Length: 79
Image (tube, rainbow, N blue to C red; front, side, top):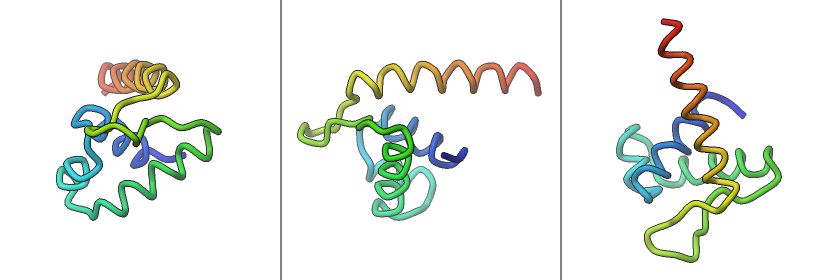
């Protein structure tokens, strides 16, 4: 897992769209999807329910985003 994967995950969760997240970072939707899949593989669980439109977070995804937001807040305080 790397920092970009975390940023992509947060962007996709907030926008509820892989396409909109990709546009935010000026990369392809395929690249976002691939990085999020790698993150899910590293964690061993799906973070998004892809059967809904727009996409939605799974229970694991909701928990994970809460943790990421805490970490990001701490990083901002330290800068």
